[in-house]
Amino acid sequence: MFFVLRFLVRFLILAVPLYLFERLDLFALQDLEAKQVSYILNLLGQESEVVYVNNIPSIVYQGRGIGIIGACTGYRSFFALVALILAVPKVSWKKRKLGVLLALPSIYIFNLMRLVSTVLLSQFIEFQVIHDYLWIYGMTFLVLLLWLFWLKL
Image 1 (spheres, rainbow, N blue to C red):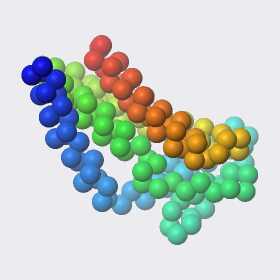
Image 2 (cartoon, one colour):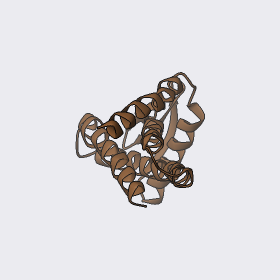
Image 3 (cartoon, helix red, strand yellow):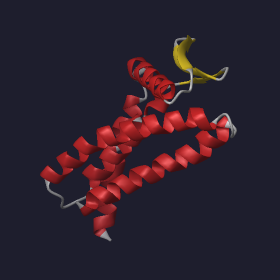
């Protein structure tokens, strides 16, 4: 019981930077991801471009624009995974470092896949369904899956 309580307290404390990060300007990351998603779509033969609406990078695909705001960059999933990794008691710092080093590229790549699939699926399924249900739960599941994988290393 003490182990679980200690884990939960540590996780909550480590989650604090997530809220501090909310105040940062993520335009450069938003822009990079929008351009990468558009590039991937074009590689797949799906014509798209990046435009800026109210200084928000937006992917235009089949006449519709999807804005890439700060929350779309996957930073919340990254911070949640790092907090989970660092909150586990009685784990070596070597294993923690490995987990954090693997977390960033893993979340980044999965987030790009999430954005590409959201753009593609939005032509068949309502955007809000994909965004609010499939991927909010999907990314939460992914973070937990990556954390469980790390625990087994």
